Length: 241
Image (cartoon, rainbow, N blue to C red; front, side, top):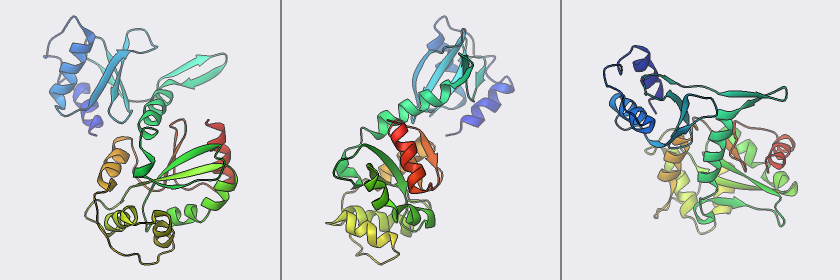
């Protein structure tokens, strides 16, 4: 998303001549879309800070704007409460991400589940990523600790890459778990094709801010970029319920 371009444009005052509107939603949308017509605005509402409006983008990202749409900010909004600094932006983004991730049906994932799961993590993965392979080698340990591991596809080199083809073959295999195990062990797998969700999952990952693998989403929507040892990851996952 070209959010930084919007912020830069507004900082230069390029929207000051676009006029005002009585309705904050209308004014904010008009000015933002004048700068970036394809900006995926999902909702605009008052933020906890008086006079500031919260703009939710597709994927969960947040912007903040004045009621007349003349000023916009990108960054974290904190609230100090009971001696603690609460990151309101991160909380809202995590909530939006969790809603999207938890709505994905299991048939579109590669799932490694314990008999009695206590929580789950969703991992955007690639087949030839060294840290993805290291994480996969610890899936059994995560399962023993009660963590279900759900894989989504994220070919780092794009949809025209070998990684994308390998991921598609994993998703199109009759036994996805076995195919994923082989792919993570750098063993060759049969190249097969079918109607698969790899492209959609890659797009989703980009929308919510994934820029590398593994990208781990906890049950509450919080994103952990990069590999974490199984014991530490399980602790984080269980605390995120």
